Each structure stands twice: as C-alpha cells, then as structure tokens.
Length: 288
Image (cartoon, rainbow, N blue to C red; front, side):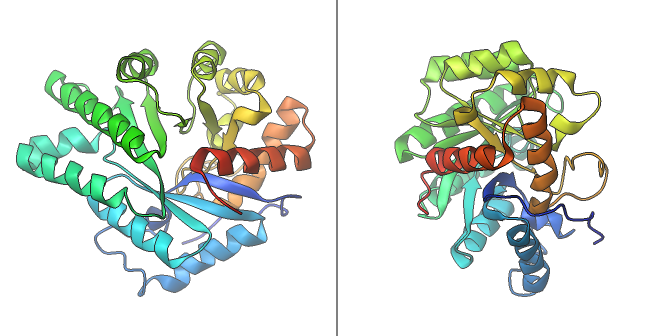
C-alpha cells in the first residue's frame, strides 16, 4: 500500500479520535489477522507515533470489525476501541440475514462494548444518503436508539455517524435522553447545526474533509466551535486531507489537518494540540 508523504511531527501530542486501521491494510475484516498482518499494522502505528499522534481510537462498525477492534486495543497500549453496528449495517443484516441475526449482532455488540479497552459506543446514528427505504430507515432508527441506551448504561461516550440526517439525529437524541459524552464523528454540518450540537454539550470532531476546497460550510462550523469542544480524526483510510485527497489515509496524516485547523482559526498550533488532546482524554475517559 502506497501512503502519502508524512507531515512534520506536531509540536505536541494529539489523538486520532476515529479510524479503521484494519480497512487501512487493504484487507477485509474477515481475512485480516493481527498476527499475520502485524508488521503492516505496527508500521501504521509507528508512523503515527513519529508524527506525534500518540493515541488511536479504532472503530469497529460491524461484527467482524468490532471483534477486531477489541482484540487490537487489548494488544497495543496506545490503542482503544469503539464498537457498534453502523447505521447502514443494521438494516443490511435484517434485510439479508434476518431479524434473529440482527438481534444476535446487537447482543454481541453489547457484550464487546463492556470490554475495558472499549471507550465508546459507535459509530452509530443515521444515514439518509445510503439508506433510503422506509423499512431500512425504521431499523436504522431502532438501532440508533439501542446504541444510545447502551452508551448510557455502560457510562461510555457515544460516537455518532450523521450523513444527511442532522435534524433526525437531534430528534432521536432529544427523545431518548442525551448521554453525558457525545462525539459527532466527522462533523458534516454548517455553523447553525454546529451551534445546535454545542448547545446540547456535544464534542465536534473534524476530519480531512475540512481541508477540501468545496467545504466552506465545514470551515464556517469550525470557526464557531470552542477549543474545549474540538476533536480531530482521520476516519482512515478515508477522507485524506488536501493536498493528498484520494490517496489512502492513515493516522499520521492528522498533522496536515491540525495545521490547517490552527491556521484557519488563528490558533497557536501547540496550544491547540494540547487542547485537542485534553478533549480526547475527557470524551473517552482516557488516563495518560
């Protein structure tokens, strides 16, 4: 796998608040093995450390990926896990495998989420871009409500996927009751939606998309987020920041995104790095 040129190391440590390192190896969840693929995985971790990305929140959003995320987090001390059924995965299971398999999958997520290395329930939420049929949307919302309840029961952060579903996300959270710690993964709204999220106490996580030339709405949102509510992520291997858009993403690439964010906001880079790391520790209840 050919990766983009690494940025200069950040002046202070930062965490990647959301990635899928198993997808970044080019393997499927079912074929990836921590022992067989150890060197490739450890190379990605090493590249991150050299860039001063010292903590990784690896996300498993279907059953094989969730199992991998827990195993991976238990093997490496700077790696943590988040697990859930992705908003598009839940209806797929019902449609292709049946209701009983869906219920079994939810039960396994609930079990995996209890692991001490799992720091968040997610990514869960709503996706009106890929899920469009009424029956599928019903399952998607039911799954979202289940994960909200699970996060509250376990006292863990809720990591939200929101694609073309801003108001629906807020409606469901308001009706279910908002967990203590909520992260909007790969924030995709405008400044007005950012303020609605901030009013509810959410943390907003920005990915490489904020650097894209056509992402003016994200930059407007970024400008209204207080430094103590800001997170950064890669969503690797997706959403690689400019000038490498279209290439595989990895945690070490956060250096490009962080520098862009600091420049856009007019923030001191070192101070912002420290703030983002402090936020990450607080959201996911991490101990240095």
